Image (spheres, rainbow, N blue to C red):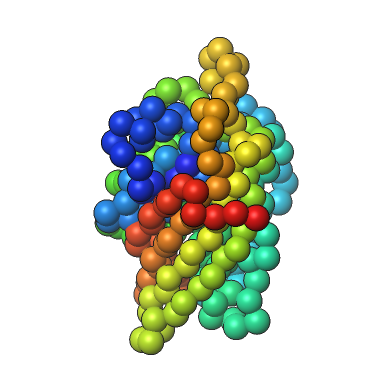
Length: 215
């Protein structure tokens, strides 16, 4: 159930792609697995808002209550760093919402991904939708760290996810699966973001490494 651009062997990636649950972030050189949302559940009534570029009309992103994607301590006293965190969080939410909605061409994903990353994100979404999979359970994202580029137009973000309570569900058979026995549930993500002309921080690359985090 991991997100895109996991640094595993091709064989291991193919075996666990349907189970990996972490969020999708895109990247010109990324290729990760992700978590699908419980597609048939009713969405929650609220959607988070970003403090970045407040005049920009952002897409409304909703997730079902059966898939609890949470962000622990994604706050910063620096307003620019907070803007990066807010938009990065919405990109993650957009990816899972697209899987839940069976929508590989999600406009919300396109809003938060650079053009060069959108194709990778679409393939990540389709790795679930093509198999009639969705996700259920809980996926916390924690330990975010932001490093700003000197020119103020780029940023690097790292964070971790815990897949212990995240599972996939087949929409047709209702079969539920988690990661294979012995799989480390922790995945560390490294994300590059760039600020577009409208002031939105978009994902430009994502790389994930399993077993590089802990609580």
